[in-house]
Image (cartoon, rainbow, N blue to C red; front, side):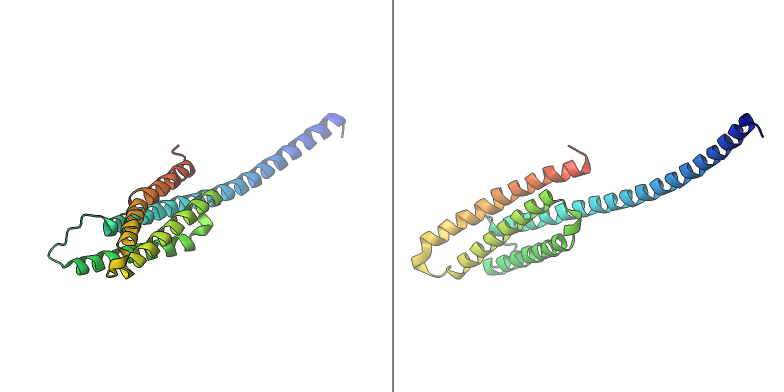
Amino acid sequence: MDIIEYIQILTNYLSKIDGVVALVIGYLFSQWQFKFESIHKRRLDVIEEAYSKLKLASMAFRSLAAPLQEFDGLTQEEQEEKKEKDFADKANGMFVYLDTKRLFFSSKEQENIDVIISQFFQTWNNYRYKKDIRDDHSMVKERTRLYKEIWDSTSQEIPKLISSLEVTFKKALGLK
């Protein structure tokens, strides 16, 4: 066997190996791509649901704290109880969802979510305290101060925090 024939056989052999290697690499890449796309799709679904739950809880809280209320044939106490239950249901659902889906949020998103949750709890505690001192006539100034804090939180601070998180979510979705 001469050198030219040997080089042709070697070249033919190497080209077959390259084809097999390329096939294996292509297969591995497609598997990785499928997993990445699946995880990314799941993350996008979680972001969509999380944002929706945040907005719904925020709107329910703002409705509860609003200075002008419609009673729809209910007494003030009944309407307040109905709105408290609506908010509590939405907020608790949101808290559980966000906690169980932490894996899907980036560190920055999770920090923003933690701040929002903290603001919800702080405002809810103020709301409950305001209710506790409702009949104490010596606490009129305190009730007024709490009412303003609650309204500012539900109408300005919480929506602003959610908007900030929205910007972060949009970046994750590739929208901004």
